Image 1 (cartoon, rainbow, N blue to C red):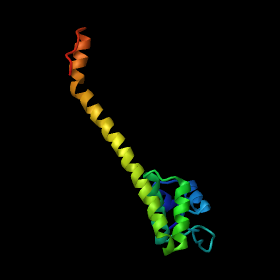
Image 2: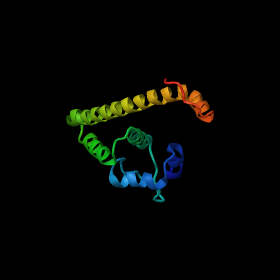
Image 3: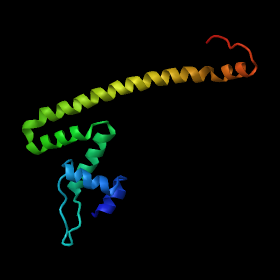
Length: 128
């Protein structure tokens, strides 16, 4: 698969794909006889995985570390798992903050119309 197809498939810029390759978070992509990148199925897996890690908030530096550990083989499984567990912990922390914000937003929205009407009528809203 050519770089433009991969770019469209993953909704990522060609420059980002080249950057990922240059910094080693995806493997070096083989070239065809004309020198153009020719992505294999295994390369697409890595792009998908890197995007998933990025969406979960993993830094490029941590992804580089993780990929380096993957390349070292099975002896690094515990270290790789630790990176993923740490990111999971951070995501749970973020989710707790978002859940709390949603509760407060829902509370405000539940009395919003009454409050706005009271303000428009220049009266004091009831306490809720």
